[in-house]
Amino acid sequence: MEANKKNKVKKLGSGSIEEEEVENDKGMIRKGPWSVEEDVILSNYVATHGDGRWNALARSAGLKRSGKSCRLRWLNYLRPDVRRGNITLHEQITILDLHSRWGNRWSKIAEHLPGRTDNEIKNYWRTRVSKQARQLNCDVNSKIFRDALRYVWMPLLQERLQSNSQMEHPNATQAYSSDSSSSASLGIQQFCSESDQQVMSNHGVLVHSIVEDEPGICPSMNNETFEYTNIPLGDSGDLMLESLCNNDDNIYGFCHDFVMTLE
DNA sequence: AATGCCTACAACCGCACTGAA
DNA sequence: TTTCAGTGCGGTTGTAGGCAT
Image (cartoon, rainbow, N blue to C red; front, side):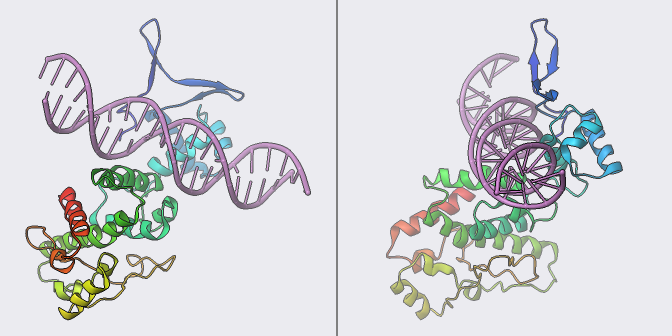
C-alpha cells in the first residue's frame, strides 16, 4: 500500500488536520503512516550513511520517528530488494511447508523467500491460512488442519503450479511426474488407518515419506524437486481419497470441505 | 447512492536477546 | 556483574478499499 494512500490523522476542533504526534522524553515522536517526504528522507539517509543504529539515525536524519519505526519502514517497505505483489504459488507452497516445520518463525521463513518480509508472510498466514481454518471451524494449530494443509492444500497448489508451468512451457521437461499414481504416494497415511494403507498398497500406491522434517532444509532452496505427496484430484476437484478412506467419512468430509473452501 | 461488513496489509507494541560500557 | 541502548521477533491493531446489500 502506498504511503500516501492512507494517513492516520487527528482532526482538530478548527477543522484542520495534523499527523498524530506523541510527546515522549525525546520530544515529539510521529506515529502512524509514513508520508512520502519521510520515505524520501529515510531512503536518502540510508543510501548515504547506511542502516543500523536506528535511534541515532532517526535523530540525525531529522525524522520525528522512533528508531524502531524507521527500521521497520526500511525493512518492510523502502529496502530496494523488497518484493511487492501477490504471493506466488511457489511462495505459498514454501510458506506452508516451512510453517509446518517451524511454526510461527516468520523471520526464519522469510529468509527462504527472497524479497519477502516476515511481516508480509505473517499477514499472508493470518489472512489466508487462518481464514481457511475459520471456514472449516477448526483450530489453525489442530492436527487435522495441519495435516490438511500438508496433504491436501500443498499438493493442490503443487498441481496448480504444475499446470501453470505446463501452460507456459508446454515442451519443457517436467521436474516431477504428472502421473498421479506415482506422485500420489501421499502422506495419506496421516489420514488413513493401517487398513486403508493396505488398500492403497493393494492398489499399487507407493507409500513413503518425502519431505523430511529436517530443520534448515528447504526443498525450494536447494534445488530438490518438489515432491509433496499428493492426494490425486479429479477434474472436478473431487478426491480419490473417497475410495482410499471410504471407511472414514469424517476425514473424507473434512478434506472435501477443505478443497471446496479453496476453490 | 448509502451503509455496513470484510479483507489485506502497514504499522505499532511488548518482550526477549545481545553486546558494549 | 550489572545496566542499558539497540535490535529482532511475534502478536495485535487500525484503517483504506473492495464488496454485498
